[in-house]
Image (cartoon, rainbow, N blue to C red; front, side, top):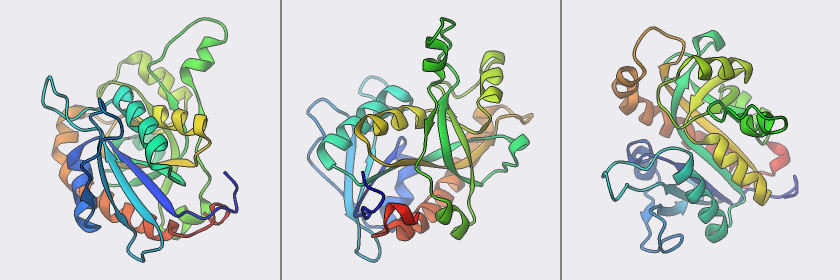
Amino acid sequence: MSDEAKVTHIVVLIAMEAEAKPLLEAYKLQQQKFKLFSSAPSVVYTGESHNGDCRLSVVTNGKCSSFGVDNVGTTPATVSAMAAIAELKPCLIINAGTAGGFKSKGATIGDAFISTKCANHDRRIPIPGFTEYGIGFQDSTPCPKLIEALNLKSGVVTTSNSLDHNESDDKLMAENDASVKDMEAAAIAWVAKLSNIPFFALKVVTDIVDGDRPTEDEFLENLLQASVTLQEKLSKVIDFLADQKLCQL
């Protein structure tokens, strides 16, 4: 997509309903009855930016029919991303959500980070050529003016399919120079690159990866407030982006 193209339709991919709810309410987005494709659990909400200059679609991963919980992780994120690109045809994709942050990178609870790159830290394939493929670094769309204007932090988002982490994960996350740890951004970044759609992630910190508290306890304790913060930051991001040229981000 040309850098001179304007942002006229943003698709925001959010895994969990609790993360998406404040944004849906703030923009009065309407749930659509259609499915992105017949078997996809993804749920679509549509509306427009506050100034009316940009279409806004939010896609969540829906609920797991077997266990009744939010579909999280790279597999449902990939399904939602591919279907959203094919059916909604966005100008820009944002993967928004909560995540772990690294105090060694200056992260504190409630901080908002924009991705500079995305990578994986659980795809360990010690075969020549496949090692780099497994890590799978993907550049995010540069948006220095957005980061400066909204006083956001930035850094590498590293992805796995586990909420916790082990010593092998820790080693790769350090090698990835990670500022934020999540469960979907690298997968969505890969799909966006396949379709040549501009992409970045916006993550709000719920827990400190290199801290001394259990991840699950800190995550659950801070999820509600982090979701509210996510809506506040994401609203400002959307209003900044609406009808801007990609080269002006």
